[in-house]
Image (tube, chains in turn cyan, blue):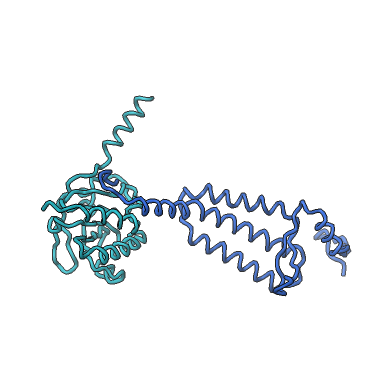
Length: 169
Length: 152
């Protein structure tokens, strides 16, 4: 019984995505037709969120991200969102919440591949990722959600700490 | 998951956890307590035979509105269930210790103000019984179909 429990816990620990790790490449297709590459932000701190446009938690988080963009945008910080619901009206979402950062469309498979979540696993939205200046993922939401990474206060502290580090690029 | 190498400032984290504790644990307890306590109070005022119908209506409406407001602001997760239950239990416990609620006029504001008479306060209970006096009991007559009905 103890062995089975140990094996279960070990499997769970192995299945969990580790941080820090290099951020995979991602293309964000904006409604304007422009495609932004995640690697183009290299040298800056990036907050990337995978959202569902109809999800109230995502909408509340987007407003917080906009505040952070306003606050840290001049210091080398970029917020970006990828909506992965079916046929999201990204333009309406952006204008409704007054978002000035890029919001693009993505797929469920692309999001799972980026976050390291298996196709059959349940997940909660928004999924938030913080990437440092050298392109390493330093913080990532738990699969079933991390309220801490949706809190403006906590994110502000984390971003400030990451911006404080010297760029090696 | 947050990289342990990141030096996170402590204050926002403490603030975040305090907010979590308030909304997930404390607020459901307050809502549970207030809901049951308000219902108990206005029902007792109503049952005690208060004559002011508007006051009873206002109190009952306010209690219901307060309860529904609490429900709309409550985070609905399984985590909030035990403390919501504790709030309800505490309110019921407190209400069980109240013998009656009266509506004496406030000496300063000159408006009816709910005042609780506790079960342990024997003098106040005797005073209440004396003030209420003997209640007229309606005479009842038996009817073949519905059992009893009030005599005309």
